[in-house]
Image (tube, rainbow, N blue to C red; front, side, top):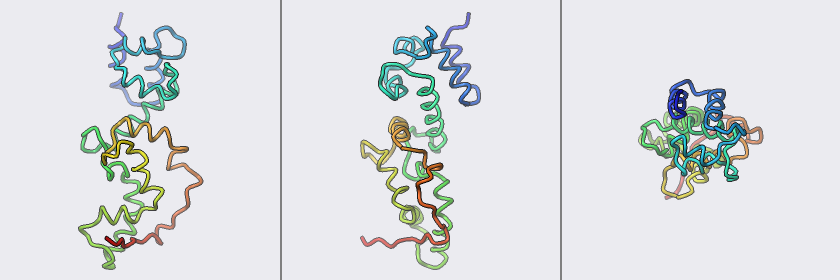
Length: 184
């Protein structure tokens, strides 16, 4: 018989899909009640801190949906953590999606002499609308200027809807996005 930890390690090496996450949840759920309790979690060699991270509603159990969603956010965090530090800086967090979107306005501003090439990060942040720029501050709950995996996952959970599919966000005409000069 294969030990549960061997099964878990095998699944971790497979492609990260929702189906595999749900299968992994099923392996952790030893009693088959559809929820992973703290004892089952610990028997699989997992820490109490990670149990708290996965138990989104703090009911003492990890449902299949909680598990799959947290794994999805973990993968998203790991993809963004380009330098592998286990933390996200502001530019890693904002990601290439926003850099590409607002980069066009920045490049045009540099070409016109409205922005300095050596201030591209600062200009990029000033080009971003506040609802995007302030997102980092909402996630950074300990205000240390970087996001831990836990802060990132909690922040993603607290968003009413993922940024890329939120229909209430204003549509931006990227041709009209221009850098704003800040005093000071």
